[in-house]
Image (cartoon, rainbow, N blue to C red; front, side):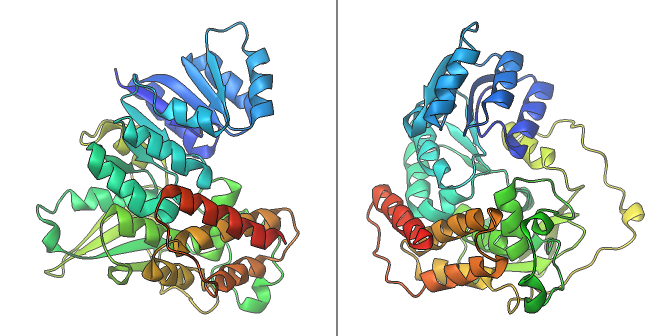
Length: 377
């Protein structure tokens, strides 16, 4: 029985992971959440983990009272998340927390010798070089959970030699505002932006999908996961979200991974790799879809993706800087404190700053804090 630690258990990915783990008969020995203790308490009573962690310390104190009748240890803060991620009994840690909070727990799991299933893209966007060096040093596996990166990972299983790969092709749905003009985008509200046409996701990643920032961050993530430069990673808008991503081989052959837009497939593959096991996801009926469409990204109207390309090309802490600014700006947009278009403008302004080259993870965290502060001024 595989023993699983799940970080971000109350979010969309976390809840679906618990569904997959329960069906597979895995033992959930650790759970972590940000501050949503009511659903976390329900999960604790259902899955009986040995240890849980809550990032918000007051929420952790409240949860301790609520589960006083149970034999469970409640940890708190970043220290608690890292301690949970490093539990020696774990066979795998799945990290689905949102934002930069996920970086240090990922490193803690890797340094403890655990394989990590990663759904927290900020881990690689901000700390890619340090994380991948740690993965190699400790001899663990970093398995992608994002649907696009999982699709590429699955396609790569068909290539016996990395030299056979020419380029990666990420797919993007285009979000609810596909085809909009800049003038139209200036009027959008958080309520409109949160209505994604294909996927049910958390608020932050949904807004990132609308701005195409999510796809830009995925380019950076793919650069580290698959050791490919940004100019060998392309993006195509695919409205139906049936093709989850593709790879092109040096002989011109293109391999794609297809399926219903259901996150339980990439979650399960990360947990069971290299095996494939039955899942509750409905079979893909291509005839029912009738046709699939593809479009070039509109980088003029949605420039976020190109800004991310520039950041990873510059290297250093620039990806961490734009990630921090975007994360803070999205939060302000959701609070209706800034307009939608201002998110990308702030990211562009960040690339005009001189960002020092980081020599450690602590330097990355410093850049993150400083860049967030610039947005809040």
